[in-house]
Length: 430
Image 1: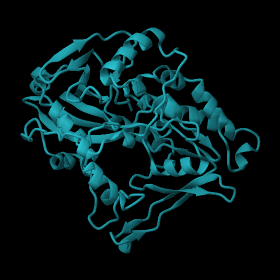
Image 2: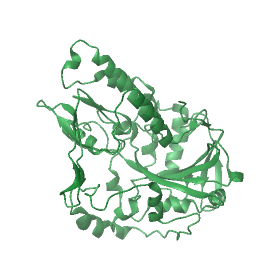
Image 3: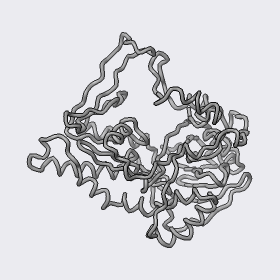
Image 4: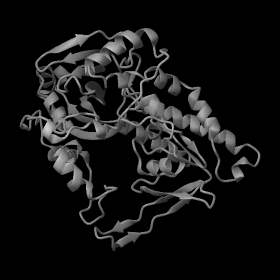
């Protein structure tokens, strides 16, 4: 079966947005946002295809079952995971369809949970994986999929934007990809908002809706129809924030390990490469005499392979771009640094900027912030949050435990509401 990779990038733009203007900027060769020779891929289609290929090779896939806890042997080595119990009521009692979770034991476990997985947090704490890493900084990406008026569709067109609707002191940007999918003229557009913003009243979802009201974007979407909506978290820390990613009995790959290029805002290729390197290293380990008969394998060969691959080179070369936007000059300081230092040095500068504060420490109390007035949805170009969530296909049974839990249940009332006016009601994309 042919891989669902067919839409080649035909043209790309890098633009600066003001509230009413769209200003083209030079797309210099070699900048991280360049997509020359790349393809626009619908990741859902690619993952489905990869899953089918894996099952044909004998890989067992368990959709609908979450890994709930990490298993350890008597020596403290990782020896597998346990899946969650299903068929549990909201009060914790078993329902008629109750099924106990499974323990899946293994000699080696590869964790690929994406950004900030709950098992990875447990492992990081147990093995102190973040001891020598900077704090991780995060972002949230929100996206809509549109079917366009064919007369406005530019198949293979890629655009990345900076500036409006975000303020100069806030890291983030917009994107717009036109692709042809089996003859259907589609547009994937969205916004990435760094979560180290200062104004507690900023709402990433509403920033996406506001972006679509820009005259140039509105013209592109008019006559089309919105088909989908989605959001995901991004770990934007880059090279400085990569933790130790091997430990007795397992390893981290992909976004779980922080392998995302924060300057290009791309990580799928790095995730796939790290998975390949982990598989190669583990295959070599299996065939070492007697080595795979014991638990607690420390896959040092995987660490060596990553550090000798383009993953490490790519992330190291752009390591100072993201933190350069945290200066008092914000967007302008970051662009100045990227233009003068990165374009000429390509990451060879002998210094490395650090992240001094976690994202949550950057947020200002509500009394120091000005409320942001967002446009009322018109149900043509802009939409309310609930109608957007309905497009995601997310389905949670009312009578089941909450899928999000807090480490400290009193924080929302003791801290979030009185000091920051409940920011979780705004930054949550659902």
